[in-house]
Image (cartoon, rainbow, N blue to C red; front, side, top):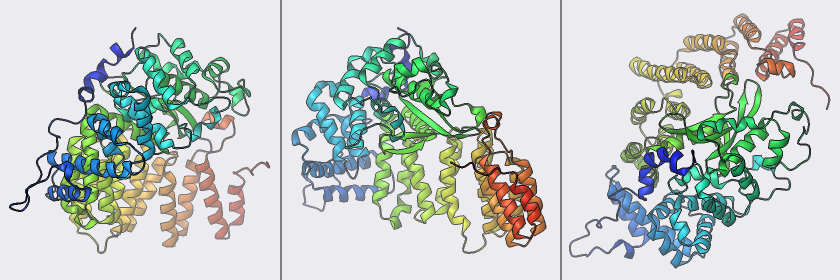
Length: 595
């Protein structure tokens, strides 16, 4: 059948051959112990205490370079630490020995859970091993995904709390039953359960659909090829009566068959499509966000349109400017940007083993005292070289520059390289740029002109990347950051001009525009440029659209940015004694209807 693991998975199997080959890359076996004083024999790692293993690791890492011995010594230390912690909390020695013999699962547990070693996750893995035995070893990444999803949930159901609307009369399957269901239907899965890395499979393991609904989905979409996955979202007929009421679904359980029969609105479409795809073994997410027409929900899934895997979307409606979306991360149990999941997909495609090595390098870096981290920057460099799409290294670098533990120039050097590699993933670049520029916004003395020019050049380079990526939301925030920098280095007039011009360009942009507006108004008020301020506020109030789209106008959904700027203008006029003018602008905002 076209689209099943044997055909559809071909690209994944090729791209992720390192995963199928198993575990850590060559050269990560425990190395010889570092030399000891003359006459003192070196004990094997198995006989060393966690404290001794930590000392050995830190001595090796002190050179500030990421090497295979450093990675191996971290695993030795983490294994000893985990053993002591977990056995004290009821995990058996026999299970830990079994885990130690399985490199893929061992490294995932040792590195991902370091240093707290969530016992709930390990107990879930132990429960799977107890019931399914060799099948867990045969499907290590699937087992890990289930253990992490259900273990992180603890006593709570693994369902995304945002999905409570789908809970009526629908019980979530137990972990063991769900795991068994996927193995039993392996031949019908559209992505390989053995080769897909567990950081992606968590978006399969978190499937809250009852087993009978999953089986229904497999039968209904038995002939659905990957190229047609985006049509699943639209298989749910849009029910306009559901916008302001229960709609045709009424009070029925929100089962997949019911949604397919009675239709629904965007949230039903997104829920339906994501659960159908999860039931076919495709990592999928219920995605939602704020755009031109307000709140909306769509579906995201891991697939490919070109040669490489990516996070794909259906129902996102780019023309409504849903630049970023929010998804639920079952590992942290918190919302996260869908663009961060997209970055995780890129990291898995690059190399899962190298991704785990990069995470390990970041953990070693954090073991250094803050005052010593500048000397250990080579570990973060090494992590980014192992797998450039491991965002942890970049976030640590940005945070280190912001708190002063990493020299600014070192951070800026890394960021310059980052801009070249991350043109397709601009959200992370803005996060890091914001961090590394933070110290520059509070200089102790005015920087040299050459330094100012260099920093403005970096900011402008980032701006061009965001413009090319068609991300005006980031472009607006970047322009605001540029203005703040100009203020910080004493170029106040230039900063004000910058805010005003950027405001005029992005007045119809609902993301970040108010940051520009507030800064400009604040500066004009502080500098007592009242006439200039009123002209500016009048221009903006006239330029910001009252309704963001025809859809919003049809349903009388006034643009909240318009409400903000009009109210601010009216308030300023009233403060200046121009009550009549203020009343005119106040009248443009209808009073709230009584509830």
